[in-house]
Every structure is written in structure tokens, then in C-alpha cells.
Length: 79
Image (cartoon, rainbow, N blue to C red; front, top):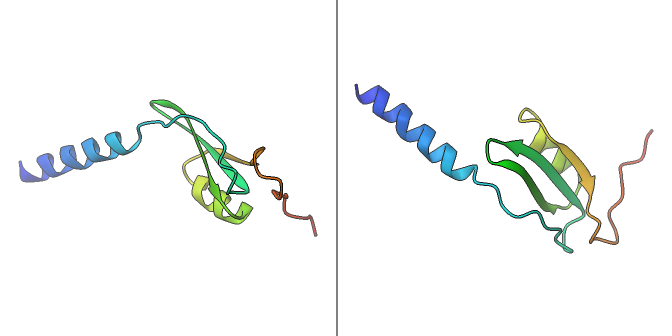
């Protein structure tokens, strides 16, 4: 019984943390992560590098794009 309560509490915390935020571009960050959850699309534009963004969406699904509000956003060069 205690294990069931612990699992239920963990799921409740995870569900409340997944509440989507309004999509907006932050002019201070170069890249945005776009993920999808039960609440819909979530856009986070707080990544200085593409690698940071890619690490965030890795395993959870989603995509990274340059921030349209950031003038210095650059895609990594192909080698």
C-alpha cells in the first residue's frame, strides 16, 4: 500500500510539472526546444547552444530550432 501511494504521489508531481507554458521567444537565448505533452505544445527558448537544446529533447521527443527573436542564433556547421 505505501508503495502505491508513493507512485501516485510521484505521478501527481510529474503531471503538475508538465503544465504547458505559453509559447514565446526569449531574445536572450539562441535556441528553442519544442516538446509535446498531454497538455499540448511546450516551447522553451532558454538554450545558449544547439547541443543544450538537443540534450533536453533527447529521449522525450521534440525538436530544436533557432530562436527567431535572437539575432545570433546559428545552426551547428556540418563537418
